[in-house]
Every structure is written in C-alpha cells, then in structure tokens.
Length: 247
Ligand SMILES: Nc1nc2c(ncn2[C@@H]2O[C@H](COP(=O)(O)OP(=O)(O)OP(=O)(O)O)[C@@H](O)[C@H]2O)c(=O)[nH]1
Ligand SMILES: [Mg+2]
Image (cartoon, rainbow, N blue to C red; front, side, top):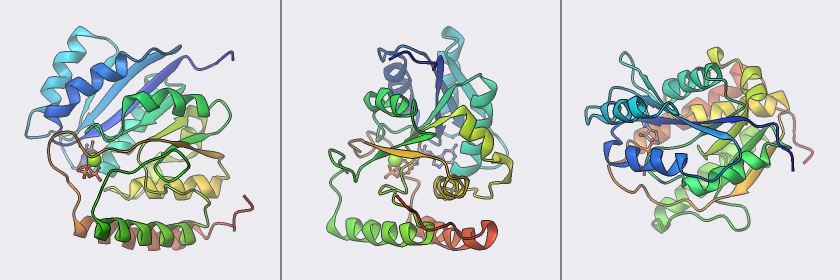
C-alpha cells in the first residue's frame, strides 16, 4: 500500500536508562521500514548519565535527538515536552515508548501501519496474540482491577488502557491541546487516552508482547499507583464525562 508516512519519531522519556538507551536507539534505527526513523530521547537529567550517551550518539547520527530537561522531573511533563518537540521535528507519526526494552522495537512497524487508518494505535497486551510479562498473581490481580475501574470511568472499549507504547498521527496530537494536560507523572498516559475519547479519536489496539525491563530499576511504586488513580478520578470533573461507547 502507498503510504504518506514520511517521518516517524520514536519519543522515549528516560530517567536512569543508561544501560538500555544505546542498544535501544540502535535497534530502532536498524528497523527495515519505508519511512525515515528518528529517535527523540527526553531525559530529566538522569544521574546515571543517560543524556551523555544520547548526546554522543546524536553527534554521530542526525537521526538521534536529545531533549534534556533540567528543571522538573516527571514522566508526564517529559512526555508532553517530547510530543511537542517531535512535532517540531516534522514527525508525521510519533511513537511513544519506554526506554527499558519493555516496549520492543520490532512492534513499531505494526503500530505505525495501524495509523494508516486509525488516529492512534495502542500496543496492547490484552488483545488476541498480545502478551504480558510473567508477574506475580497478586500484581496481576491488582492491575486487572485497576484496568476494569479505569475502563468504566473512561467508558472505553480499549483493553490495555495503561499502555505507554502507542503511535499517534501528527494531526491527533495537534488536536490534543498538549499544553492543557495537567499530569506531571505517569497518569499522563491515561489523561491522553481520556482526551482522545472525548475528541472521538479512532483507536486501534495492536498486539504486543510486553517484557520486563532489561536492565536498571523501576520508578514505579505503590504511591505512584495511588496518585495515578486519584488523578483519574479528577478527569470527569476537569473535562466532563465521556459518552458511552457504541463500539
Ligand atoms: N523523563 C523522565 N522519564 C521517566 C521518569 N520516570 C520514568 N521515566 C521513564 O518512563 C519509562 C517508564 O518508566 P518505568 O520505570 O520503566 O516504569 P514501568 O515501566 O511502569 O516500570 P518497570 O518497567 O517495572 O520499571 C521509562 O523509560 C523511564 O525511564 C521521569 O521522571 N522523567
Ligand atoms: Mg518499564
């Protein structure tokens, strides 16, 4: 099929991903694709020197970009700045993904292809042929309950609501009013999904196999989860209730 997709920017927020980021960037840029791939790393001045690694790669390869944020830290704020910078880089599509190899580059082409017909493609663990990593029964039960709750508040048929492996068309990002997003932390993934729902954006879930982070340590903890859920409860008051989905 003829494609109008010329430039795809992989936008990766990082905090202490020095052990992962170099190999990850190389793997993304080595994908055999019909568009021009770029990688934009949005680093919050990680103490482990992630930014230095990216800067060195960027000096030798114009497809690599670093956005270094030095003031506030946060997955959400970094992602918002990253989306804006990716648009400025002339992206036709922006792929948002984690910098720890949980989101495997081999799924990028499928996500991008799905945005030939949808506004957004979500890399999903919970559709047919998708897979989650092996976690404890307790952790799985918690995330199952959380997902159910979020799907009800959002009135969405999307199964993997918290997936941060997604591809957006430039047009839908421009309609999102990125400056109005309030999430500083990981709840930004959900806030964007909520706003997409209110916009009536078309969303397609694409199966992915999620794997545990390759190296480094998690920034998630129970407190982050609680803060995220409290944030979710604010969305209906902030933005209004979404309509029940006909899908
Ligand atoms: N720029 C920036 N990136 C962050 C921040 N916190 C987390 N990240 C990045 O966001 C992505 C997701 O964070 P993770 O720590 O992997 O969270 P997770 O995937 O839910 O948890 P694990 O994979 O189990 O560690 C990774 O690429 C992190 O490096 C932050 O404060 N600022
Ligand atoms: Mg991770």
